[in-house]
Image (cartoon, rainbow, N blue to C red; front, side):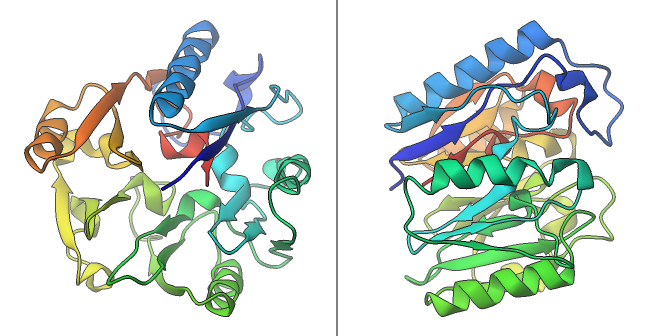
Length: 260
């Protein structure tokens, strides 16, 4: 069960954030509305929020998930794969120091984005999938794996560099709990996910794969009725949230918070 989350609203220069998709420029006012609704949903799920101020030095900084990996045992500060985002980590370190006695870090030449790290407990073990992507390299994934092992966790590296339509591993993978993973078609047959019950996301609803299990609810991006119906049939309570403005900037539901 998670009890806290760290969030940061987008700044006025959110339109300058990095993106690999061509969906048009985000509407800033709408992005603020969607972020506020997201925060309300987290609170509805029982989380206490630490709300940071927008940081216009870093247009991508609303995507706080990429700056750290949080576990029950400790916190690992990342080293984002996009050079323009590396400065985001220092501010997050100050915030996390209030909750964790020690902070570990990824160092050069390693790169690691939190969006490439998916915690997925299996058979009572804390297990993590770590994506090798355009933002996370082998050195960063290896360093995180070693750190996780030191605290009794296991990890599996998943190379997604051959999949062109997702930026991070969690763009196409989510842990639903109950030994289930939501996966896009391109990941569904990977050996790394054997041992889990896979809930496949239809190609036309691929964006919704970045959903978030928060205690008794699963947050999903609105506009994906097929997947939401599947989750409800499996017994999950869903909360659908508008995410259009963050989707334009390669962002998803998990990206907007650090949950612990």
